[in-house]
Length: 335
Length: 82
Image (cartoon, chains in turn blue, cyan):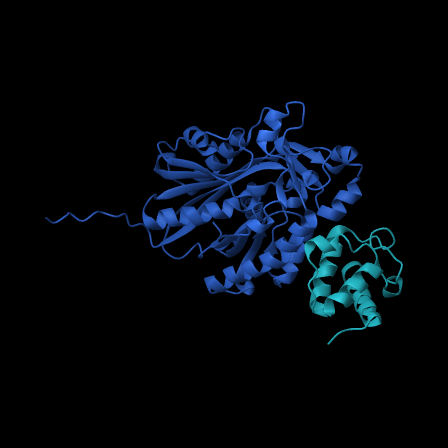
């Protein structure tokens, strides 16, 4: 007996980012606003982080609200109908519930039903993990268009008295639409993990402990700054170089360098180690947005294109890295 | 080739100067990186990574916090060479 052959999907040979959208928190929080509980100052925070202000969201504004706004802008700019979206992927560490996903809610809100929808837990690398997945989905034919969102309300999981990371954090969402292209627009992804540094950045206690200790504090973010700094600069510079090599280009071919907006000191040292030429625009959105984890790369990309619209069509090196530890980097053609 | 204590001090002082602008003559035994030289944790890590390359040694993350004074760093690098 002969079996009929299965049909397998075949997608577009090439993909690209069609459009980017952004939504930042509605509140501008200065260093003076947060310096008191950490016995610090505007000067101390600026010198160590480069952050002057960070955007945070009001109590009534959720990460899903920000994601909805960013995704709507990206879909509108892409010139597609929400009904053409085959998958919605949201990278986040600040969903308000462990299940269901933020993506299912946002897919419904933006009219992308019945698109596949799921969240990614890859912290500050989450958006670039999402780009890798969206690229694969479109090239395999599993979806024609994919919305990838990085969405965070980190102020929900920041402790005002924490001196390791909380003063860096902001709220926002950035979104892109990935779709078919006539020429290569997303390079192969260089990604990976280093679970040996699992506890160098993340939540300060498990949820279970908080359940068992109702008088205690809710879990919040913390980090070992020195360990993360060394890894984020010197290890990630190798990953970024590998992404350039795999794409078959050099840093002088770049229009922009858009790393995760972790800390201005990391961005500056990273650019130095990578020997990014002066002609390349380096995203420094952290100065007024803060570190928004999974949202930081698309937010920074959005700002780069607002401030330098002439870079549209040029190559950008994007790289996310964070809790896990996990990382992912690609070269993309800017929308 | 192993560096002498004085050579390590001179090399370390140059690295500190490169990263922070602190004059090399201020980087001497008895000084604390944080309290006397006003070097923050991020600059300290940059100096450590550059010192690893300069002197061909490994300084693990968990050792960095123990390098409080110039003496601590020089002694660690000298012993790590051997």
